[in-house]
Image (tube, rainbow, N blue to C red):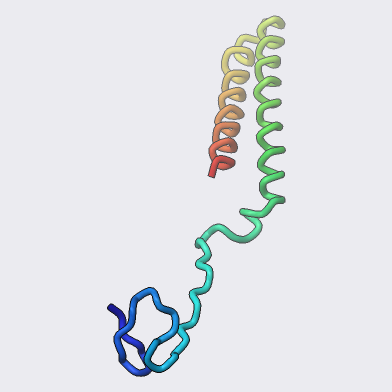
Length: 103
């Protein structure tokens, strides 16, 4: 049971107008979710995230090619250390971008 703030009469909790005095309760405003507004959640940010995901995916393929070319040229440090390091860094970025897109 609820009570009218104006005349203190009993009323149902679902009523929006007091049956005793006619007090009209203000309608609740739409509750916005904090942190889900601004440029970080705009359509421009979605496009930038999609382009970044594609660019990081292409960079993964380039790192694999770099490693193969470096190994064929006899540059084992570049082919076995730097190439895989670049690959896994870019792969981590792809995973982060994809997880952010899920939210």
